[in-house]
Image 1 (cartoon, rainbow, N blue to C red):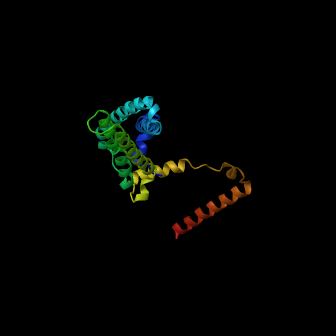
Image 2 (image 1 turned 90 degrees about the horizontal axis):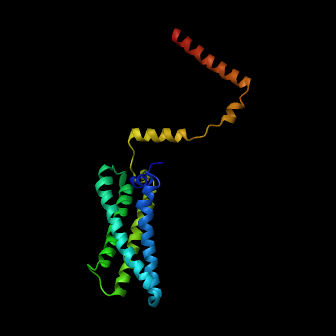
Image 3 (image 1 turned 180 degrees about the horizontal axis):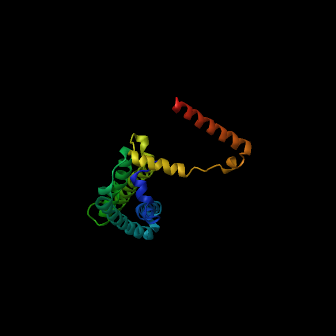
Length: 202
């Protein structure tokens, strides 16, 4: 099975790439979503949640901006995309910069409105981030050959060799061969070799 570039990046340098590129941004977005829901549910007792929401709103956007720049400058230039599935996974992941960046700009006061309206904007933007991040995860786990992409011959041969190397050998069946079976195999090989020699003499 072939992997997308998205999945290869996450699996490289385990577990740090997985933590840095998936766990941290998704965890911050989900915690921020929970904070916004608690603020809406109990506004009279939400001072702590508001502080958490403000801090996470700033941190999530700034952190993902760093991740976005790292991908654009250091990861994407070295990629050879493996069909549209691979492209969708990578660019859906990078699209997360728009909702998280918008939340950070709101927290910085660049744009926005009243507090209640801003909270609804946060929730809608967070839903947008979770949608694109899950699209990236789902398509990132799909075999890119299902989208019509064909791997280079050399890479395909390496994958076949890897799959064959992982196939278990049934040593028990080999051990059950008795002397009669071995003699029959030897006679068959000898007969085949004798027939080939006769053919060459004629």
